[in-house]
Image 1 (tube, rainbow over the protein chains, first blue to last red):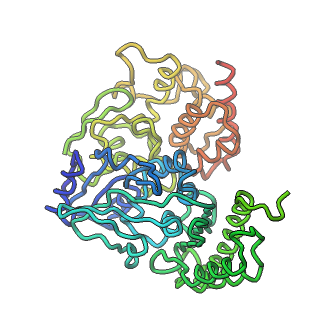
Image 2: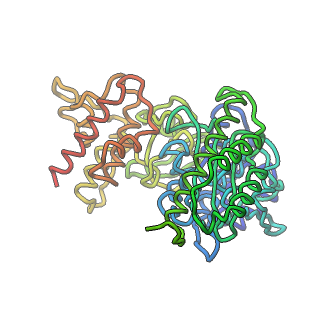
Image 3: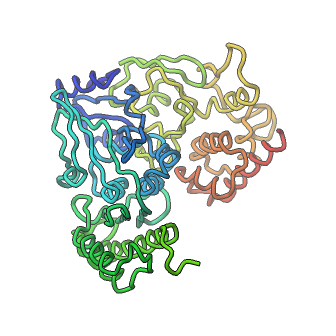
Length: 296
Length: 192
């Protein structure tokens, strides 16, 4: 094994081009587990800890450019207002020690269906900035996950940053596990209200081969909210609408039975989380929206 | 490969390090610092917790090569680290030498454990509150608890639980550990 220690982003890209089998390591919270357990013996480890740019973030007009290695702890501390869904999801990642090291770039690189950041990214809307010596490109998050622990990156590409839309409305994240810390999601659900476009986006984790959106459920809800004038009148969501939305979210799952839970349980739990997160976000929207009807 | 880094305030050099080796292995097997414990090797248990550039991390998940040029504090250097934090380090002789760190032990010249040996406040509180049973989780908990008290001198019970949520203990049921951290916090606020 060789340990490659690039001092700059350009050096890292050159190293990855020269050794496409090199495994990037930043927080190490996935890679080192595999090495410690002898599940993986990469020819090259490509250490990204020396590249300061990966630990920086910029809050822009419409989106946040989040460096690939910004640890979850920093997201929780500094980006709660701009990225509430991702901040909530970050808080459910493992333990303080892990959150101090791990970041969204690693979650995307590993592309496990159980990664905690994915539902939040899908719900908020995001693009992955991937780069190689050939150039840079932005991969829409909807096209990024291609299979179980597979993603759209080419062999010579590295993740530099993630561009995440700034919240324009309430966002929520919910996760099922056996305890509050150190839990790999049995299943997870992210939901974001986008009042500016009058749409709702969702993200489901750990209930299909890849993280997915519940598109049919989103379309149903968007139409129902529009039809009922909910965005303007700020009325409480009709229980039948919430119920139908929950059922459609459950139907968007394609889960398996495994040690953490059964497929049936996952489908059921995703439905429950969909209804709850919708209620939470909608109540928050009703509380803050600039509507006057029925407000004292 | 060779790795140069600072441990407990003093520069160290580890040789013949395998590229896939963890920081934990380097500390225990190459530098003779067995304080950080090796248990799950997957970041679940927190017994290998050390501070890397001040931040608590699982040393089993840090590749040795990643610590080149960086600063690590282990439980062996915790007492000195806490002392310097209180005093504010002004002289150039800060830190614990490798030799001292290797010889560090929580047994004193007196009958009671801890007496006669320099301990950090959080270490003393663990002893006084009876928070140590088999002791395997203790080093990780000490490092995590000490860091929390540095950041947050008046923690709520919720803050303590959150800060220690990455450290497993199978003996105590955690109540005595909670007591120890509350005790350390109370003593810390009295001292100020």
